[in-house]
Length: 294
Image (cartoon, one colour):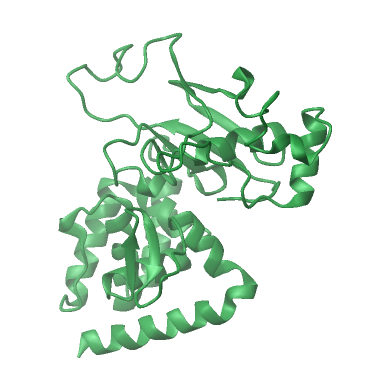
């Protein structure tokens, strides 16, 4: 979850699931002209509003104050009694069946994004990869920087896929890593869950079949700028070095400090100031991986 203005676009997209309505039916997700309205989330335990800007930087808050023509940062206080910024009906975020594109470099869109982040526990998936983790998720955040458009498969797509495949097919470890990320990104399709006991032909067959079945999925995963972090996180989870807490947050086993959602954990591990923690987790994963192969 971003805590300052950043040159990045996030799409809030509907999660279309199978239903009794036929594919393409006007009411399959929302009827034309209808929309969902989401106010600032209330904390069920305290009865107070959840502060959307709790960990946001002062510089960003100042930009928000300027964009909304407020008098000062104090106007953003969720406990303000009169003229509360957050209870104003204008703060309601409307999303129709086409979703919502948010520019996180724009203070107004940033406020909407942070407000919607309050719903990642049950209504909005924190990332596209996690959209199937809960049936209550109706929408999902999707980072537009990592999306490969799901257009018709072209020869160029196939060439790119087989080129990448050719680079990894002599290395069982690389193929294991890819299938592990695919497994968790594709909501645990057991047919593709990799095993250390597989021989190279088994890996070649599985990945080759996957490319023929869904070449766009292969390219999306392998070209993801956060691929190496996802490999580390999913390996850590699979080896028992990471665990889930509070339903959708990752935490290093033996600690009591949740790293956050998949997106939060990637941001944490990729931050240079956390390089020591990243290297320690990487070393543990590599060591336990070697032990598991014995």
